[in-house]
Amino acid sequence: MIQKQQSMNLSPYMDIYNLVVPKDNVLRRINDMVDFSFVYSELKDKYCHNNGRNAIDPIRMFKYLLLKSIHDLSDVDVVERSKYDMSFKYFLDMAPEEPVIEPSSLTNFRKLRLKDVSLLDMLINKTVEIAIEKGVIKSNSIIVDATHTRARYNQKSPREILIDRAKNLRKAVYKIDETMKEQFPSKNTNDALEDEFDYCQKLIEVITKKDQFLQHPKVKEQLNLLKETVADDIEHLQISQDKDARVGHKSADSSFFGYKTHIALSEERIITAATVTTGEKNDGKQLTELIEKSAKAGIKVDTVIGDAAYSEKRNIKYAKENNIKLVSKLNPAVAGVRKKEDEFEFNKDAGMYVCKAGHMAIRKARQGKKKESKNQTDTYYFDVEKCKACPLKEGCYKPGAKSKTYSVSIKSDEHSEQAKFQESEYFKEKSKERYKVEAKNSELKHRHGYDVSKSSGLIGMEMQGAISMFAVNLKRILKLVD
Image (cartoon, rainbow, N blue to C red; front, side, top):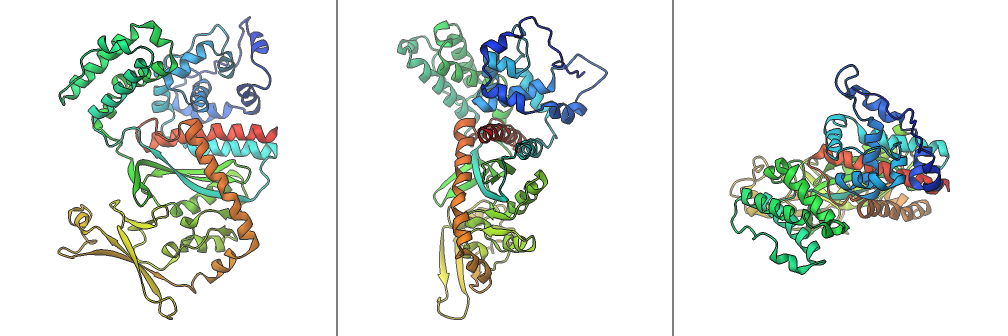
């Protein structure tokens, strides 16, 4: 049963906050700026209103998740810090003497209350609404780009994941006391997953009995991660990898296993829209959705700034139909005429096409002379050995064929209008703004833990993205208000 537990706090110690939490504290300022009642409005249907025990206020639970993102903490560590950090307690609308929640409550909140909620769009729209109210968004341009996030449960076996996390914990301990090697249990030497679990549990038991190690943040962090892996994540480990994650390519010779987040950013560096996809998805295909989401959030979009991945034909056409200037350099490989557009997608970082099975072309060749009136063609060659064994080869690879190619016809006169726009001063000046979205991607990864997914599945990745982008937008709004 849900109730608004934070509406009135009668603790005689509330005045302590005025002494220990200064007015310029970021969490105090966020509390003053944001009316978090929208959380209650969005989640009230997820609770029973006339039966069961009283639930923890959803606003407080949401704030716990926000603190996790702002400070890049685990469930256990954010709850632990909330015991003694008065700025955390103030932000959570707790009395100074009030006890904190159990860390497992956060897991249940994510799984039971946030599931099926359009959290990503809701939270971004809320921050854009605040930014417009504060008058900090003045531009009508959005900058678009994609950033990748590695899956938490990668392509390693369950046993390899446990071995890695146990190893990191031991290394953290050895930096403090190398003699602990003699006290640790003997390492597991067979391939049985159950024996590796048993070893990890014994390792945890030895370390938790040594109070001197529990005082060190690095040891505590690795210990909590291994505990979560053994206790809470067994189900995921048995799956061995994230079922929703996919292989994406960062360049011709480097790849990642995980997800992509496609972001639209105002020139004031406030995220106006985002979509989360699996790692293999093409950046350019998400453009229309980012524009429409930004418009729905309240942004009047008259210019879109992006790299060459966004210059494909349908985006140029969409921009023209909607009177939007598309500041994206033409890439013949993307903008040319081609068949089976849904089956082959261009990877801008590698400069190669990728088939629907995730295999990247190994080389390309241009055919036809530039000075001739006849169109030139770029032909991309795939590894035929992979095609022979591919489960999706039917209708794509002809049995017995010695090669598999994909061709793009380049028509220089078809995009003359966009090519002419590329030479304008407006295009050149607006192109200089593109670095802002790359800096925002870096901020998400390095300050908010967005480089690795914190859970399994596309839904979990969307939740992580929603909270992270809500946090960075609030911080940016505060900076612009100043």
